[in-house]
Structure formats: structure tokens, C-alpha cells
Image 1 (cartoon, rainbow, N blue to C red):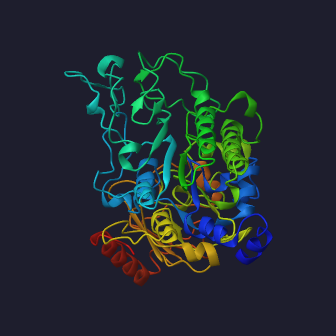
Image 2: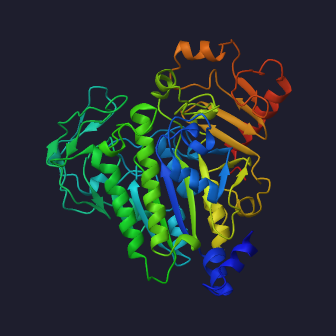
Image 3: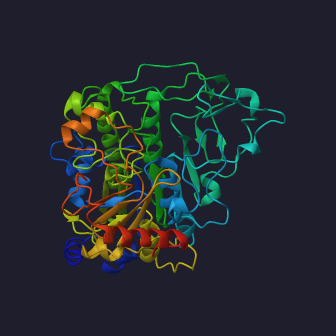
Amino acid sequence: MKRTILLVTALLLPIDALRAADATRPNIVILYADDMGYGDLGANNPDSKIPTPNLDRLAAQGMRFTDAHSSSGVCTPSRYALLTGRFHWRKFHGIVNAFDAPVIDATELTMPEMLKQHGYCTACVGKWHLGWNWSDIQKPGAKPKSDEKNRTRVFAPDAFDWSRPISGGPLSHGFDYYFGDDVPNFPPYAWFENDRVISTPTEPLNITPQTREGAWEARPGPMTPGWNFYDVGPRITDKAVEWIGKQRGQDVPFLLYSPFNSPHAPIVPTEAFTGKSQAGGFGDFMTQTDAEVGRILRALDENGFGDNTLVIFTADNGAEHYAYDRIRNFQHRSSGPLRGLKRDLYEGGHRVPFIVKWPGAVQPGSISDALISQVDLFATLAAIVGHTLPAGIAEDSYDLSNVWKQNSASPRRSIVHNTMAGAFAMRHDDWLLIAHKTGAHTKVPAWFDSEHGYVEDEHPGELYNLRTDLAQKRNLYATEPARVKELTSLLNSFRAKGHVR
């Protein structure tokens, strides 16, 4: 396929130039959705009630993976793993809460830092959610209070000197440019650019607008006057498109990491997308997310980057628990054929959409059932740009470049799944051991289990053959003791040593 594309485009660019652009240092765009289930993508789910034409087109232009996984069933850990090539559970389990410190250490090599060593210009536009050194701007003596659920430290707006720079964010970890709102439902509700807040939050959160679906979920804290949650997604996309335009005419390759704030709650599709799906407010927000992906992809084409850019689309974890009501109300299954949702050890918690488009290298319209993880992006991109990874760097990451280029078998046979401390699952080949009483962390409605044939048992764990039981309905824990023993030993081994590969 690569030879065909090179012949077709030979009149436009010399073959040597094409090879230099596509094979050695392609531009790289990583589009990272937030709380998007495997079945929310139309290309993955023929019964979807949500139109996703731009993502479906991207899948038709590249390779769609059916067995791809985030590191965690929640967002911060998955983002950490993607950028470091290291499973989050080696270091932490939970999310960064409002005004928490960074989870990436200054000594950890990140993907953008690695790419900068090969001449890349790098940008992060969107949701960071990996922490900042808020002590840089916290005023002496300023102390927080706890919110009503004792889950968030609540600061008054005047607790910080908002004019000062803040370290520990994207610019401290390899990005040349950052624009975003850090976390859409956490304070401060403000715009960040590079290493500082650029819209001063002078008042506490005082708005609770009607969301299109689910709970509001915005935690208390400082807010910029006039802050509008409905504007966040479009503004982030505007900035991503603007940044791409600024790369035109530059002679260096670029990395754009664009982590969306959607379709995470608060579910706030703009009026232009209200009613555009058959799956309620969330479906409309998904449709808006798809349109924002389309805007970024068009910006690549319009600025002449379409043929020499590697585009990766995926998501941080499965859909939020509102997805259960979505099944009853709209007959849409965000997890598609999978069991579980966000937070869960079941497949729906961490098996996510994953598409790779790379003209001249990845076969358009191809589908792969190779077992892969988002931690593998680090080693794969390192191999593409010719970077040799030292020992102890991206230690859980596999090079998947041959999987992408040749649709070959994955070098990865195992993944250790985890969301909460103390609860792990071991995937090896077709088998999955849940080394916990249940794979559910999100509460499952009784009607769902009853209607879909799920029953509770008294076994201390769960074992499934995903090749024959993707829906995870037949627990083989009691009938396959040798397999349980084998996978338990493998899990203990991987947890004890500092790497999986």
C-alpha cells in the first residue's frame, strides 16, 4: 500500500522527501477523548444511535483496533501512562483532584520530551489533569476548606496570586505550548496559556446551569466571571486549529496532543448540536466531539499536513455511569458488546476506541484485533523517529510500529488492569483474570444484570475467555483452577518487577 501511495503522489513531492516526512519524522496528532465508551464510536458499534461521521471516516482512512486499552478506568492515570509509557499502578491509582500537585516527576522522560530531542515542536491543547505546583502562586497563610463531600480542597479566589507563573504543568514536561482549562469540572474555572492563568478567577463558582444529561459535577472553587461551560469545547478546538495554522511554513515536525474535555460531564453540547443524535444529551455531546475532531482534521488538510501526519485517536476510559440509563432511554450501549463502564475492571472500563491513520504507512480501512495498550504509544513513536529507549524509560511500552504498518500480531501478550488500589486484573492472550471479588467499581443497576443474564456468585475472583465470551457472562474461576493459578502467578510477577515488556 505504501508503494501505491508513493507512486500516486510522485508528481507532487520527490520520493526522498516523502520518505523523510512520512517514515522518519511524521507530524503527530494525538486526539484524546474523555469518557468515551467503545460503543460510542459508530465504526465500533453498528447499533449506535450517535452519528460520528468524522471518526468513522478517520477509521476508514486508517487502522481501527478492536482490543486496545487505556491504563486505567479513570482519567489521570491513563493520561500519565500515555505520556510516560509506564503503567500508572506502579506509582499511584487515583485522579489528581483540584489544586493537587503533579503526578509526573521532573526526572521522568515524557513523550514530548523524547520527541523534542528529535527536533519536534510540541503543543498540548485541552484537558491537562496531571497536576500543577500550585504552591508557586498560593499566598502565604491561605488555607483551603473541604467541600461538603470532603473530596475537594476549596480555596477562595484570593488565595492565589493569579498573575504568577505555575510550574509542573505541560511546559515543565516537554510541551512548548499549552492552552486549555486544565479540568472542565474542577476549579479554577479559567483559561490557562502556557504556564499561567490568563482569565482571573475572582469569584467562587456560582452557576449550576441545566445540563443535557446526568449530574452537574462541577466542584466548588474559584471561577472567572462570565465563565460558560458550553464554550469550553469549541474554544479548545479553535485554539488547536489556530496552532496548526501557525505551523504552516515551518521546517520542523510537530506533536499536537489534543485531550478533549468531552464527552465527560458536565454534558453541555451547544445549541447547534442539541437533538443531533438519538441518544439524548450525551449523544449530542458525542456528536459535537466528533465535529471538533473533524475541524482539527480539516485544519491539517487545509494547511498541507494531511499526507505527512500520523493521527491517533483514542479515549482515556469507558463511559460514565449515566450510560446505564442511556440503554433504557435510548437503546444505545456506550460499551457496545462489552461489560462494564468507567472505573470497572470489566472490559467496558478500559477497552477504548483506538484509530491510527498514517498515509503511506498504515493500510486504509484495515482492522486489527491485536492486543495493545496506550502505554505502547511511547515505544512506538520512539521507534518511528529512531530514538533508543534507555533502560528504565517507558518500561511497560511495546513498539507497535510493525503492527501498524503490516497488521501483524502484537508483541504484547499481557496487560495488568487496575483502577482502584488493591483491585487488579490480569489479561494474558485471550484470558482475563479479575483478582478481586468483582470487576465492577461502578454500581450496576439490578435491572441491567437481570435483563442481560449477569448473576452474582460466591467465587473470590472471576475468569473469562474473551475469545468466546467477550460479554463476560461465564465465570470460569471455579472450573479452571490451573488457569487461575497461572494468571495469578503472572500478575504477581509483573507487579513485583518494574516492567511488563
